Amino acid sequence: MKSLFSFMAPFKTRLYLSTTAAIFNKVADLMPPVMVGWIIDTVTHNAPLWIIATTGTTDPWPLAITLSIIAIIVFGVESLFQWGYQYGFMSLSQ
Image (cartoon, rainbow, N blue to C red; front, side, top):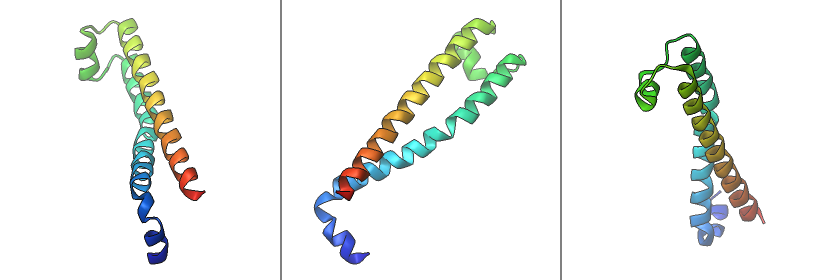
């Protein structure tokens, strides 16, 4: 391992960026179950207070739109970090 890391010294920045992207991707992977919980809570009229504060209403449509926007952002961020770590590790493996 010592020999491997000494060989990778010129690529240290790419290794750190790829590792960071992999960690953020795994954190973003945990968001869909959390979002399902928020959706279930919203449908049962127990929406989280921060969602109600964001939309300013308890009406289901604005809450659904807010949750949809959050889901799109989360999946976009997750995809971006997945691309980042895959590209980084694949280029390092070359």
